Amino acid sequence: MWEIITDTLADGIKLLPFLFAAYLAMEYIEHKMGEKAKRTIERSGKFGPVLGGMIGVFPQCGFSAAASNLYAGKVITLGTLLAVFLSTSDEMLPILISEHVNAGVIFRLLGLKALIGIVAGFIVDLFVGKKHGTGNIRQEDAWGSMDIEHLCEHEHCRCEDGIVKPALRHTMNIFLFLLFITFLFNVIIDYAGDGYLSKLILNKPFLGHMLAGFIGLIPNCASSVMITQLYLKGVIGLGIMMSGLLAGTGVGLVVLFRINDNKRENVGITLLLYAIGVIAGIFIDLLG
Image (cartoon, rainbow, N blue to C red):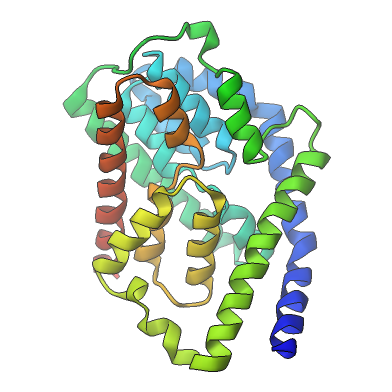
């Protein structure tokens, strides 16, 4: 057990500087373009899914939270909202960077999420064709209330304190999750053998996609951390990983349920998001 603990700490400490560098860079980008990106989505019109899919790939919960606010205020369409939700990568990007995954692979993964979000958004708008939401907030307040700021603050994605402090907070938060998951992997491999992880239910076709999508819906960064790590460890394939990450929205769904009074509509959006994620993941695996 002591050897497992030391190996886990050694692996985690190696990732720490790269994880901090990734979050520092993303905090800088969000700090510089955050409000501009949100305003761009607001003025996107019928091209909303394209801009939503492209902007959503930046792993900052502020974008998905802002999209929920704009949708509730009838500023953007359902397709634009889903494009942002589906393309949001949450913690996938910083973990891939810290694990030294090839840049080409990272860009392809981000591009795939954005493409799925854009296509799904256009299809939804084609059939829905109008803005829903309760419209119970003023457009000038569409970026959020104190409640939403509190939610995002809980996820450490605010940048009012500059970029270094939020990057440090977020790095330590994810670092602890990574340590826990790595420790769990090491214990399982040491006591059950290398082949045990491949037999887990999460790696089963169709059922694995459905379970991963359900895990992705959990509004916590732990879900995307776990799914990405399972992929990097070779436990799950690309399609299952994508099912989980496509369904993940950061705090987007939490904000939607808090601000949009039409709870039945919120449940419908959640189920639609889940279905798109699962179906897209299955389709990816069928394509090989």
